[in-house]
Image 1 (spheres, rainbow over the protein chains, first blue to last red):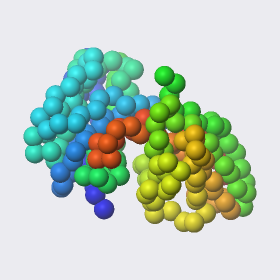
Image 2 (image 1 turned 90 degrees about the vertical axis):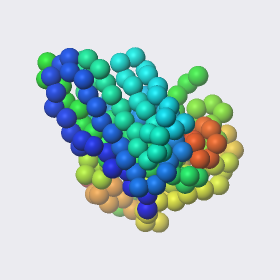
Image 3 (image 1 turned 135 degrees about the vertical axis):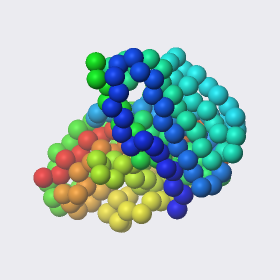
Length: 110
Length: 114
């Protein structure tokens, strides 16, 4: 089946640092979605991207839909303690069901 | 607009029992998907319902079943529970065209099987 490669798997950073994570696929995607999940809760949608090249911001978060339609990145600027969690990318390979990355676990040292 | 709601939030069962979990999608959303999430396996797709019909099914045994009602609310059932069924079960409702659906998740139901 379709697979998304999400990297890095985990990140340990200092408060105030910028964060970058990305997802790549071997096939073309029509949609890229980025979610954040905190312990014991469901994933929360952060940013949705629908067009190749699209660059969208949500506060300190910025995500881009790669022009090849096979990748996407999420950046977090000036990280704060509440940014801790697991970040998932997800995408639609054509009309097939949504496919999820394995997640990036973000840990922040104050 | 209210988000996706799931009930119950927490559940403890014993092996061999069965369990039914409920999901109410965001108003106007007709597609509901279910996922199982465990620490080692990530998000595993169970099934998807659209207009009361199962549209997609993941690779889970027949003990896992679901249904969707005319008001788009959905339930999933797990029969003959096993210890390995302990997990966070997530429901998500979707909006948008099929190849660009955006999924919104509920808070999940944490199931513990003893």
